[in-house]
Length: 315
Image (cartoon, rainbow, N blue to C red; front, side, top):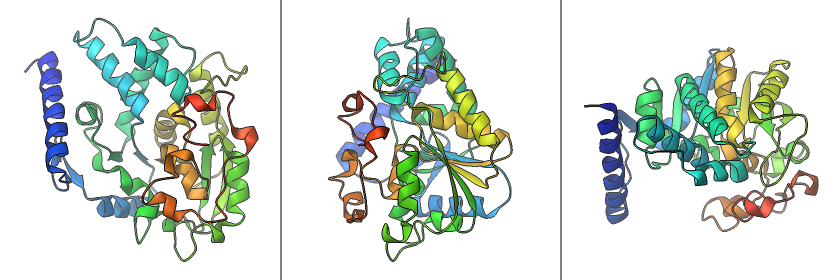
């Protein structure tokens, strides 16, 4: 089968699976996703614990929706399925995920980097988005696949984050001040659980370039990514946890390639530190974790156009 036909076949398979899923509402536990068997989410949680218990580098990650949309559009363009990269995906990754400037050729370069970064994956949490299985099959054939919720420790009775106890943990996230303030009272955030144990916390403030926020230090997104990687490599840490928009996945890959351990949690990272966001205020599980010690991010951690990001979902 030619590459273009492979793409079309994958599209048909994805659309069929989506329709069937809506009709049957059955989980995909044990099912094949591409050529991979999907690990049940508790098994995925346990696999992260196992990876943390070893001294070897690893990368756990997930695709953000805007990043995956860019990959879909660019790969289709390269295969000749599309005549161009869809302008809407260029716009969305700029507004929602911090990629800059808004430029088609740089967006293509970003997609190429995402595809290359997949080679570092050991475990990916999937939410069965359109063509996600194609990307895993073609760019991360070495990776195990699990449910996205495996990466979020509050869904598990024995959370993988318990294995962070006593470690040197680096967090890369825009909410640096709020994370540090919340960690100082970590025992109040998830009482009676092992979700947030004691560890040596270091935080790098992630470059924030979404929603009309600019950073004059950098000419483009790639310079900002290089900066965060260089800042991270100056520090002594056992594992990095990343929640920094479009920077997170490729940054995790670079850290693993440099011999480090990295978990790209994405937007849910703030929840680990008891930081509320409107996305979760009505969530049937996560909103029930809230208590009087959970807070909103500091005002100085809110970009000017924050409402453009899914109505301010992180704030």
